[in-house]
Image 1 (spheres, helix red, strand yellow):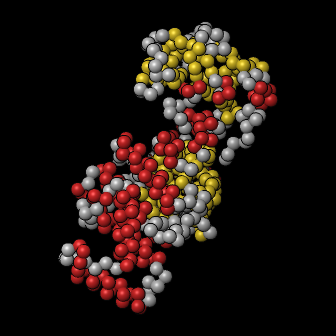
Image 2 (cartoon, rainbow, N blue to C red; image 1 turned 90 degrees about the vertical axis):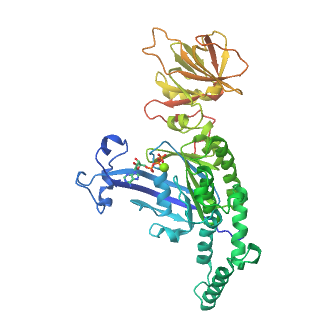
Image 3 (cartoon, rainbow, N blue to C red; image 1 turned 90 degrees about the horizontal axis):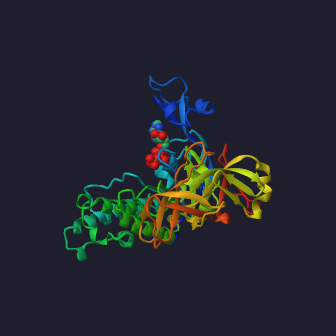
Amino acid sequence: MDTDVVVAQVIFEDVYKSFPARKGDRTANPTSVDPSLSSTTSTQPKSKDDTKSDTVTILRHINFSVEDGEFMVLVGPSGCGKSTLLRLIAGLEDLTGGSIRIGDRKINHLPPKARDIAMVFQSYALYPHMSVYNNLAFGLRRTQSQRDPKRHSISASLRRKLESGLVSATRILPKPFRYRSKREKLIEQTVHQVAEILQIETLLDRLPKQLSGGQKQRVALGRAMARDPQVFLMDEPLSNLDAKLRTQTRAQIVKLQRQLGTTTVYVTHDQTEAMTMGDRIAVMNAGQIQQIASPLELYNQPINRFVAQFIGSPPMNFISVQVRSSRSLQHPQFTLTLPEVWEMVLQNYQGQTLTLGIRPEHLDLASPNSSNIPTQVELVEALGHETYLSLQLTQNSQMAHAPAPLIARINPYQQVSLGEQLWFSVQLDKIHLFDQQTEAAIRPSHLPAPTH
Ligand SMILES: Nc1ncnc2c1ncn2[C@@H]1O[C@H](COP(=O)(O)OP(=O)(O)OP(=O)(O)O)[C@@H](O)[C@H]1O
Ligand SMILES: [Mg+2]
């Protein structure tokens, strides 16, 4: 593979994207219609169904950069705008506002071909008449000739013609006797290297129709990787693989990306994939970036309730509690006394109702006590290495309605039966608190300000 790999930073500056509104978009999409943007989209064609100047804003205020060689994962629920953001980088959609730069080049108006980007789509396509080898080599041949600074000289063109003549003339001969140029040898080396990493070496002579869905997907991945672009864009490239192959290929992609050091933007809605692959993760919701941070920072210090419930599986538990004194949180069934670090910040919330967030692994089986949570077991999910319990908080007359079930992770050797009454203590140094209006996280005073 090329030794002088060019890597690049991708910078988003106040990126916006709107589409002309379709019937029903106003009610269907919570982020719909941003009047401040309608003038910028006045050139967009409108169907008869559209009311005047209506647009649906899919992405707004996108401001961040993906560093040189970084593996950035975009994660968020379906329809939040992940693929649209990738398509903007690739040049498959036009920006409505803002700009995108790769290194020091502003790429807003560059055609896709000129951007030196390789993209693997959610639904991939291989050339059906070409073998796996040629599918992998195809992009590489094009990229290499485009990068050759002497490609337009007469001698280079004569050499290419002569070489392609020799290649065609010797193609009917057995493999060892076929003519291969220096460039073709380099391509062969790269193809084998990528095929080895993706474990498709034995498939190189097959046609796409002779492959399974998972194998095709790995060839599509390999084709993008072999091209050695400035930036890789991957849109849920593992969606067609079974669970085992998914885990394996996930590791292979990360390994290859580390070897090549190519800046990568990887889209998924699977939070496990995001946590295991990304150097950093950008969590998106409804067209906006919620938080960008390393996997563990996102897990330990989510910036708001959305990130807290999206990252982590099973998700965080949420319970409404009232701030009684600067260190005491009250619920009709229990009272928690928080560590001293909360004292200063909670002074501002005296008497207010906040949302308490507790991850399933931060609840521990305990004895009946006013600082512990009384529950009834509704469901037992024994996974072998760990067991999850779905629990109903025991109701009393002060609780207007039944709260959502809680999930607790317990030791798999603990015997638990359905309907059993259990008490849980809370690991108080691991709790999260959220403002009920803004849903923003409230931080204890010893923690630094969150990223993004
Ligand atoms: N060409 C288009 N015209 C109008 N609306 C579009 C267009 N392309 C996408 N959208 C809308 O933009 C929103 C974001 O779509 P996008 O494909 O970016 O979501 P996504 O986050 O990739 O979702 P998924 O995880 O399901 O792939 C969706 O509501 C979609 O319907
Ligand atoms: Mg998508």
